[in-house]
Length: 100
Image (cartoon, rainbow, N blue to C red; front, side, top):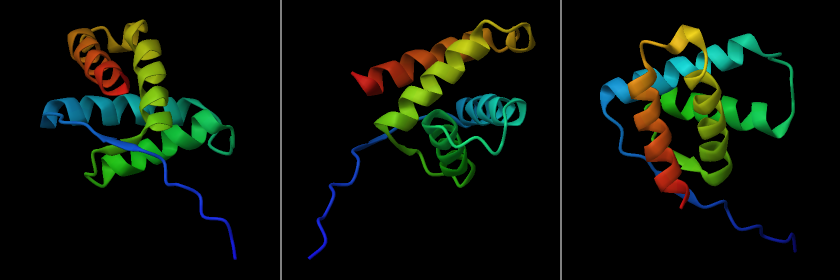
């Protein structure tokens, strides 16, 4: 009999439509800037989180939340995202709370 693995815990994020779009844009920007063929865990979790968000699903694994937090933190310091900085800070705070 195959061994059953527990499914990873998921957290539901409550995000406004504007926050969803900002997070979607940041994740898409990160994926487009990277090597799409990359198979490292970070790229895989980022792709999975992006696809969930793109489908309107707001339940994420801990690994996906951690990847989103790192991606948002990087975007927060880039000039391209300067206008959205308050939005990025709010998302970082919300995701950090979900990880506590």
